Length: 149
Image (cartoon, rainbow, N blue to C red; front, side, top):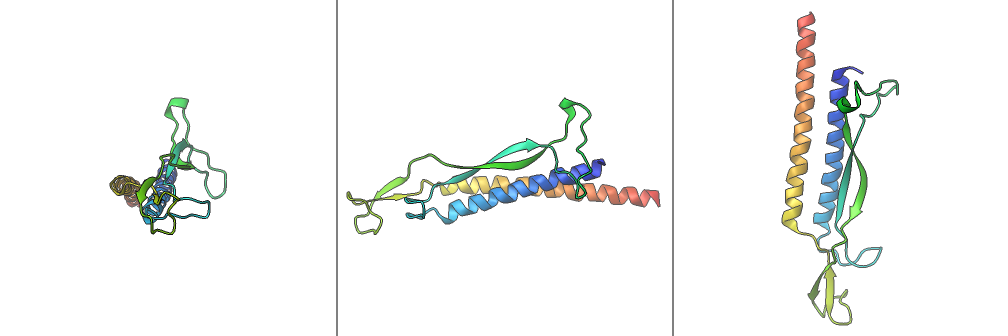
């Protein structure tokens, strides 16, 4: 696999992982007041777990990642798991609410809007960094082609 292909696949993997993370963060923010789910109880905050993996092979399946030595292996990232936050829900006293328990308390998701916004900024910046790498790699390839003319 050429260095250009490798750069593009690594960056594409990073962009896909961050896009997935943004979707999970958006879901958390959208459900921060959801007191009832099909599973029962309030919505539970989700988080994404990433793992370093070799870049995906090319469309023909024949390309392999560049691996000169174990310490010099090129790695990309992918989502390996979505975990549910074990933090207990926030209980608020609202005796008139349809989801109130016998004591008049309603369980709300334990979602911190500020924490989710910081996570969203982090994911957005990581996505933008990968997009910049792709743009720069394309510009370098274009300049190389121009030099060869």
